[in-house]
Image 1: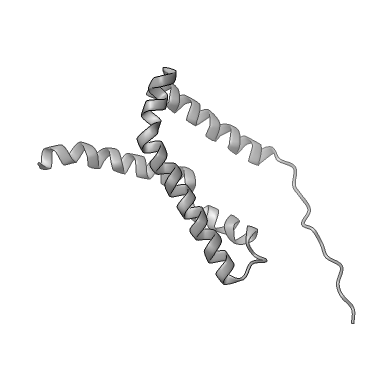
Image 2: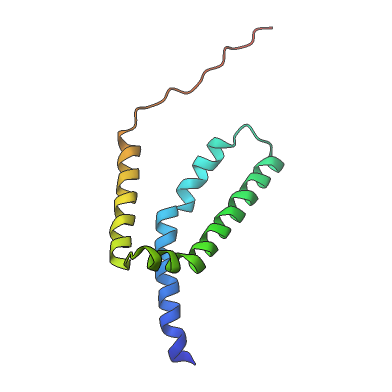
Length: 111
């Protein structure tokens, strides 16, 4: 029983650590707070629950349907790894080379 659990545990840890490093929950938390700064706490909690649910559904769907889709289109795991690396590199490059946006300023109200 223990011998069969080791490969599964190793695969799970590799997958979890890979997703954790790509998603970067600590870094994204600041983005989430800045995007939802105008919401009250209850609305922010509702948005975070919805994001968590949608993310969970997408990950579970990918887990069960992903290998079938890859087999259907004839995509191998090495090609998927290369494509994933390119996507991550391209998104990082676009974030680095994006022009800075000035924050919208609201005129001060003088009473």
